[in-house]
Image 1: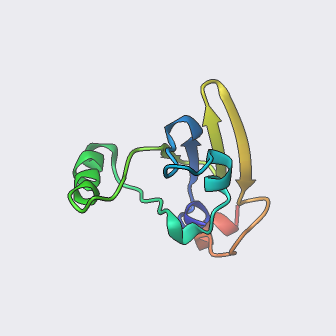
Image 2: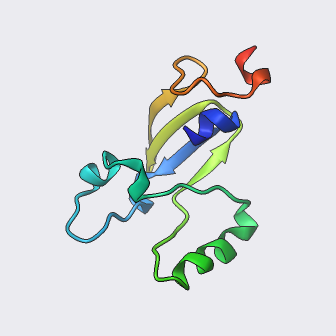
Amino acid sequence: MVAECSGVGVDLDVEAIVPPANVSLSRWLKTFPSYGLLLATERSKADALISVFRERDLDASVIGEVNSGSEAAFVAGPHRAVIRDWRLERLLGFAPVEECAA
């Protein structure tokens, strides 16, 4: 949703995602989105943003990268699996106008 609305692609590193204790990764990835948040910032600002969460006893870490494409994908080592290409299959239909024309 965030990638489509922002007109970007995103690669999420499955190996960097740490689910809560006693929750499997597969279950965590299917959990209602309000239990986890994805935030995007410049790489140089990531540590400062993460510290804001950790100061409040909330887990936060870098788990991926934003790119100039239109695909949302899971990556693990050399493997990459596209979840959705919002140019081909919209979820919300809120992509920026210039991206919709492409």
